[in-house]
Image 1: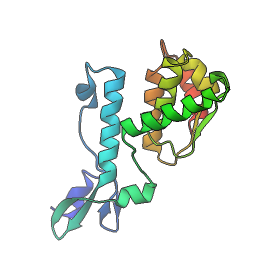
Image 2: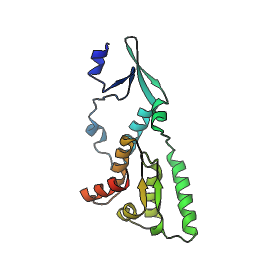
Image 3: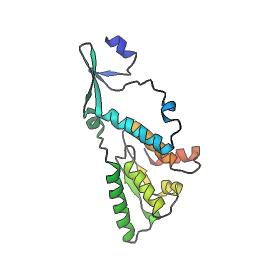
Image 4: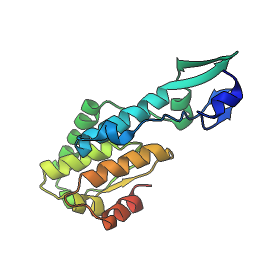
Length: 178
């Protein structure tokens, strides 16, 4: 396999490290029949997998290897869901015990990635405080990240958290999660 042949299948080369692999998958077939929540988990796993792998050209071969290069480049850390839930539920529970109302709580995740902490906060405020998702998105949650793919996944997750979502809701999400 030569470089010209590989360029048909890969987006870019960066000093022999391939940054993005063009996978010819019919994502619709993969996600067909899944709930929005299940589809988002799969997309998040694809993203996390991408951050753990790098592709190198060694001689005439394409080599895939485990690497933390993408994690380091992006500053990514994926906290397991059970830990994000425990931290978020404990923190919000303590804040509410201090007399702060749920509607007054403001949450900013300045490295939100795919929103594991923000989604747990959304779930807590819905389940424990009976707020609706739209109200929470308008008043309680903000997120910032440099990883555009992770933000796209978070936008989908938040959009799927709404009942009867509209284009206006997507504008709202994009305004508060940047």
